[in-house]
Image (cartoon, rainbow, N blue to C red; front, side, top):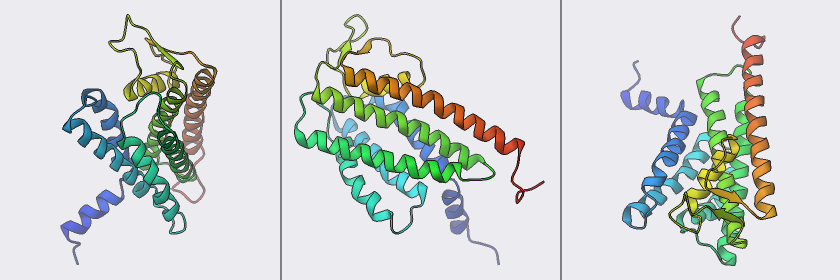
Length: 230
């Protein structure tokens, strides 16, 4: 009996969860600077970006015991992404940012164990590893935003290279990925001690993660599992 087209389409989607999540995260990263102005488009974009949290939960296929924990942590994470970021934020904004960070760490840890526990890597495990890399960058961007909310002068924007004096969400995304890739964020500088400490930690994680990933892939292809194909 031939499977229906709907079942084949469903199997295609479920078999490429990390690939779909990678495309979603990459689209958010590319489109963010063009849709960060106030307005309906900006609000709709934040709603779609928040839906990416549910995509992440779907991609890692949590057990029933961990699924309620992930959904509970996803609530403040969604609020953190839905609400506009402001300096001198209140306790509620800082609390949602902290809980959103806990959710991001939870997703990254579960995804890390799922990806690196595979004996023979395939395209899905590689896309899963790339998703972890992007999620770490977004997570540190939220941390930098929280530091700036607690310490408004934690980051300095060079007026020669910036059109605004107060860093916004995309400034922290730019700074986060530039730090993690050791590219260097031109125009924004960490001034306070917590901001500099987080910058150093992210730079170390970025270098070590790529080293571990490359080493893991090389070992997997050089010494395939005995249960795998010869």
